[in-house]
Image (cartoon, rainbow, N blue to C red; front, side, top):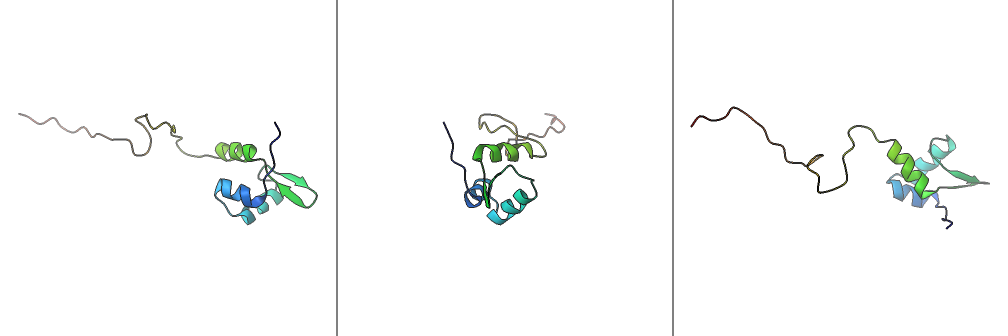
Length: 83
Protein backbone atom coordinates (compact mmCIF):
# COMPACT_ATOMS: atom_id res chain seq x y z
CA UNK A 1 0.00 0.00 0.00
CA UNK A 2 1.41 3.36 -0.99
CA UNK A 3 0.79 6.28 1.33
CA UNK A 4 0.34 9.78 0.01
CA UNK A 5 2.84 12.36 1.14
CA UNK A 6 1.50 15.38 3.00
CA UNK A 7 2.38 19.05 2.62
CA UNK A 8 3.73 21.35 5.32
CA UNK A 9 0.26 22.56 6.34
CA UNK A 10 -1.03 19.04 7.01
CA UNK A 11 2.27 18.01 8.63
CA UNK A 12 2.16 21.06 10.87
CA UNK A 13 -1.36 20.20 11.96
CA UNK A 14 -0.24 16.64 12.67
CA UNK A 15 2.55 17.84 14.97
CA UNK A 16 0.78 20.93 16.29
CA UNK A 17 3.36 23.37 14.91
CA UNK A 18 3.18 26.12 12.29
CA UNK A 19 3.97 24.99 8.73
CA UNK A 20 6.58 27.76 8.48
CA UNK A 21 8.49 26.26 11.41
CA UNK A 22 8.34 22.83 9.83
CA UNK A 23 9.63 24.10 6.48
CA UNK A 24 12.47 25.94 8.23
CA UNK A 25 13.42 22.70 10.01
CA UNK A 26 13.30 20.84 6.68
CA UNK A 27 15.70 23.37 5.13
CA UNK A 28 18.08 22.64 8.01
CA UNK A 29 17.60 18.86 7.48
CA UNK A 30 16.35 18.69 11.08
CA UNK A 31 13.11 16.81 10.30
CA UNK A 32 12.45 13.90 7.95
CA UNK A 33 11.18 15.22 4.64
CA UNK A 34 11.22 14.55 0.91
CA UNK A 35 12.20 17.23 -1.55
CA UNK A 36 10.51 17.05 -4.95
CA UNK A 37 12.09 19.90 -6.87
CA UNK A 38 10.94 23.04 -5.08
CA UNK A 39 8.23 21.15 -3.18
CA UNK A 40 8.75 19.71 0.29
CA UNK A 41 6.58 16.82 1.39
CA UNK A 42 6.41 14.74 4.54
CA UNK A 43 5.57 11.15 5.40
CA UNK A 44 3.19 11.22 8.38
CA UNK A 45 4.51 7.96 9.88
CA UNK A 46 8.11 9.17 9.70
CA UNK A 47 7.20 12.49 11.31
CA UNK A 48 5.34 10.81 14.16
CA UNK A 49 8.24 8.40 14.77
CA UNK A 50 10.66 11.35 14.70
CA UNK A 51 8.57 13.27 17.24
CA UNK A 52 8.33 10.24 19.57
CA UNK A 53 12.11 9.88 19.48
CA UNK A 54 12.49 13.51 20.59
CA UNK A 55 10.45 13.00 23.78
CA UNK A 56 12.24 14.02 26.96
CA UNK A 57 11.50 13.43 30.63
CA UNK A 58 9.42 10.63 32.07
CA UNK A 59 7.38 8.75 29.53
CA UNK A 60 4.03 7.59 30.89
CA UNK A 61 1.96 4.78 29.41
CA UNK A 62 -1.09 5.89 27.48
CA UNK A 63 -3.19 3.11 29.02
CA UNK A 64 -5.86 4.70 31.22
CA UNK A 65 -6.04 1.56 33.38
CA UNK A 66 -2.58 2.10 34.85
CA UNK A 67 -2.06 3.68 38.23
CA UNK A 68 1.04 5.70 37.37
CA UNK A 69 1.69 8.88 35.50
CA UNK A 70 0.19 12.34 35.70
CA UNK A 71 -3.10 12.47 37.51
CA UNK A 72 -2.56 9.19 39.37
CA UNK A 73 -3.71 9.17 42.96
CA UNK A 74 -0.92 9.87 45.40
CA UNK A 75 -1.19 8.77 48.98
CA UNK A 76 0.94 10.30 51.70
CA UNK A 77 1.94 8.20 54.65
CA UNK A 78 2.47 10.11 57.81
CA UNK A 79 2.60 8.99 61.42
CA UNK A 80 -0.04 6.45 62.33
CA UNK A 81 -2.56 8.02 64.69
CA UNK A 82 -2.69 6.54 68.19
CA UNK A 83 -6.02 5.38 69.13
